Image 1 (cartoon, rainbow, N blue to C red):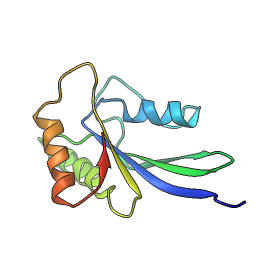
Image 2 (cartoon, rainbow, N blue to C red):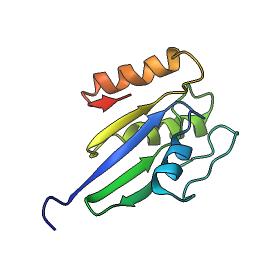
Image 3 (cartoon, rainbow, N blue to C red):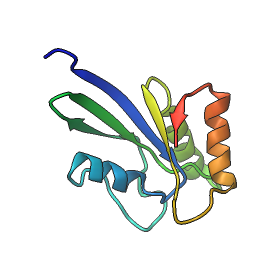
Image 4 (cartoon, rainbow, N blue to C red):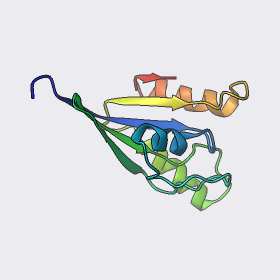
Length: 119
């Protein structure tokens, strides 16, 4: 196959903005856990979308938030490390509310790490 492409895409955002739901919709089946309870995603999860033109490996991450305990610190560290070695980062925002300080924090983190991203 000529021009067949593949790449890694990390979805990054605050807790419960729809990262896992978006991956499930893009893949076309439920491969990630979704719940109204924050921090359901504890580890980086991967879902692969295959088309006749290529493959996209989506990386689902825990929500980035201000941690209040050791588990929260570990989850945020896991999410932040998911920007390394990927081809694209998508910053996922909750469209039902105005972007807040948490969203700004994640954007600033990406800019500081010289990570190209789309919103």
